Amino acid sequence: MTTTTALPRRHATVASDLGDLLAVAEGDALVGLYFPSHWHPPKTGTTGAEVPGTDDPVFEATRTQLAEYLRGDRTAFTVPTATHGDAFSERVWDHLARIPYGATTTYGAIARELGGPGLAQRVGQAVGRNPVSILIPCHRVVGADGSLTGYAGGLDRKARLLALEEPAEVAATRLF
Image 1: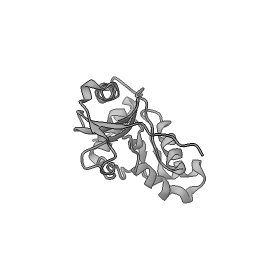
Image 2: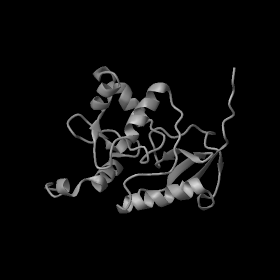
Image 3: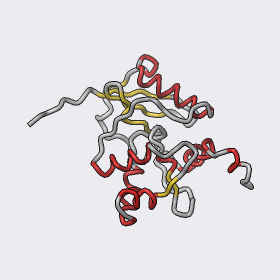
């Protein structure tokens, strides 16, 4: 039997236009990015020691890239991420990571691609537990009718992120 030793985790607060975010890293990868009042925050004792975000390359890259994204200057992230979910959640998160900037999909569409429409509730649960918000773009998943549904950071933030990514030709046709 082979055992592996997990790298020690550390965390920092990363300031953003969406509020202060709790960032958690393990080695050179971001393993968590959580909003204030996040629906599924990390379990107590799992974030490691607090470190200054400006002294850590993972947190500094996260802060810089988030700021660029929120200004509209970045459409993809290069900060390495790592997730530690069950096999199904990992498949969902991998699917989320491949949703293009400016595009949306539905829980049902993801469920069909992963095995069938009966998986939609499980897809929703995995999307809601995405540990790396924004960088793994769970905000790009909407209801079957295009409505904004569930977002661990709140629907107001989801709406803001989607509006930021909305193609100009689509935005020009909106009445509001």
